[in-house]
Image 1: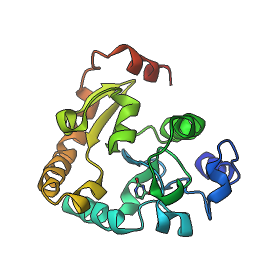
Image 2 (image 1 turned 90 degrees about the vertical axis):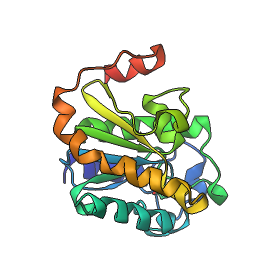
Image 3 (image 1 turned 60 degrees about the vertical axis):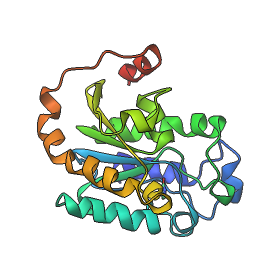
Length: 200
Ligand code: URA
């Protein structure tokens, strides 16, 4: 068993927040364990909770299309979420749920060591870009602690707001170049809160 698989087994048993009571299955994440690129979504929805796999519903189909547009499949990347159990009715994750789940995402990032971590949506973005507005910073990479964080809108946003589709597609198109440049990029000047990320 790999360390990531052991971590997934631990996540499946987790009772650190109340979300475990309502879950069918926890959704630890899946994909290529030494991938250069990782996608970090928000939280499992209905289908993810049923299957125990990330991004298998409508947003997942769009994510797969986006990956395909840059010549990748799900198997080429690692996909995880900020929180690993479905919030009731797909409500936004609460601060204490995000906090309880944070060590799992920290460990996943630490084990995978991606060159680029693509954050999908607000909650995922907040990890590397606290207090930022996604409308202002999407598509703008920042290197923190050796990893290039690249904020994008959540693919589900395009399903609710079709005008965002093009923006998401365009941000995706910049990823191959970003992967090539990631190692040469210099570390960003950080707002104080993001400084904690360096400690990983
Ligand atoms: N939305 C997410 O943020 N994550 C999933 O796994 C599915 C939908």
